[in-house]
Image 1 (tube, rainbow, N blue to C red):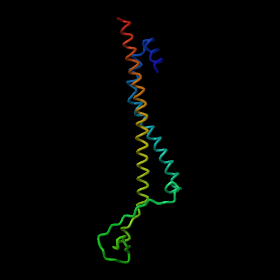
Image 2: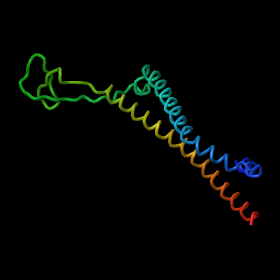
Image 3: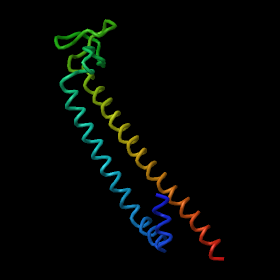
Amino acid sequence: METLLESLAVLGKLGSALDNVAQRLPGEIYTLVETTLDEVAERAEYGRRGSMFTFNGGSGRSEGVYMFSSSDSSPGIDQAVAPKGGFLHASRLRLTALESSSKKVDHETLKDSFWTIYSKLEAVAQGLRIVYEVANRLGSVSAKFAS
């Protein structure tokens, strides 16, 4: 990178090259984020397809949670017994294992997308830092020789 910038400075093209970088940077960052989101979406879809065949990574153990809610305590035909001896309508009993596993998958997808975008933008920022430092050094060296 430094050699390229020094070559541009020798040719007298460093200023226009830096202007081009500044002009193209917003569009390039937008494209970088868009392609990264597409990559993460593909990985998530691939992971979902793979997890359809194995529940909980094949451990055979369910981490589902039963949610109980009831407003009346009189037992009836369509009621189930709650853990503490009360009765619930069967329609109010729901298994949230699938909901909690899908939330976990969504959480992992978000985490993957944020960390992937962060690491790519950090690499871009480091590259721009190098360009800035080298351009400043070249500018100070050429100013010394010009005076």
